[in-house]
Length: 333
Length: 173
Image (cartoon, rainbow over all chains, first blue to last red; front, side, top):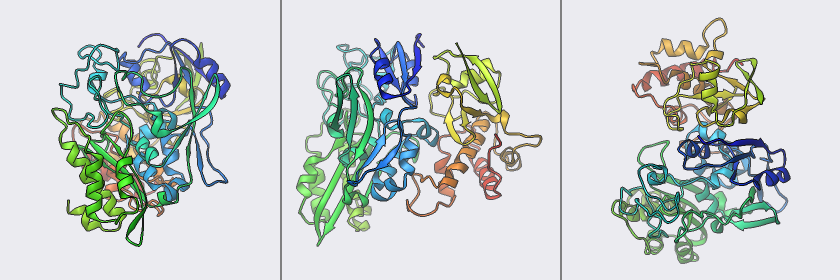
């Protein structure tokens, strides 16, 4: 590991001041950054520990929930309000990593975790545009079973590894930021970028800008929501495909729906197209299938990951069917 | 620069090098070699220790400087004259073969017991609002961050199950 300085920020202004140093990185639980530093993929000159900044989870009068960025993944998953009003979020978090890692990892850090593409990690043996801009991408024609099918580019086919962020994308979460020029907010669905020809730029964060909180808007239909993750083993593995969904059915019609996918793109993939097709339509297998097919219509398979297109569609249909109360539909596909 | 951590009940002052993981601090500087280095990248759980007597974490991914002023419990800090009940349960139920993953398994199980007491849900919890019962599936899911390459899982699960059933799971810190 390269030489690095360390300072613990006592408050946001101090964090911003320290974060303005050259090659500074904010440090949360360290579960991703420390690993990447050891691999020399990340080489910060200064670490600014932000784990002692606010991590409070606050219910606000307008029904929203404000989650301090330093809250641990476990704290958010076990919060009674999250379990009852946003169950997909609890389910997404506990589907990720292991209990030990969830106890360390912060909410802010979860948004900023880097891809688990093995070519990105392979400093000595592989080319990666994310690690070294302009170098080329060995994943595009390599072993790419885990890689993206939606929104990828010739420069990068990596996926975003977070489970939590998939639920946040579906829940219309808002990211609160603080920087040298003051505070601002961004919808989570805009916070992460698609790779384009600059895959090394993963978010809209300005240099030195800090995530201070995540806001979950009041969203009554989210009380009826879930998260389903398909992976190579039953626990402690990254998603091949995952689906976060909330569904409200009234008189047999879709009165409200939120849908997002994980494991398929460079960012948590909000299924806007499928949602639009479902709104106001019958909550039936036929419409669920059509919406899933439309969402995946633009998918581009790589050598090894073509199976994800059907898998994503089937998982969407299974999750929507189970939320609609017809488990037989989910089981039969 | 120096810093102080409370390791197994004793205030311990060590140099504050930001590159040193909590795992390497324990093993290389304090010679507490009970905590094991398996993968050193957060995949195996062999390095699991407890923070403030209750929260299980991976010491390989933890920079030691982040834990200044905190209490760390390792496998060496569990026995108090007699073996900790979980240590005894691992012997009684033959919860190991080579033993390399055992310290991490035991610290992890103590942390799991605390999470159960708080009612933290897991991936296999069916009802997020109901009290949690430590079923066969719950135990295995909650311990999935601790790998055993010998495959002694049946004995490990039996040991943890019996120790928790007997209510002896609390960490002495």
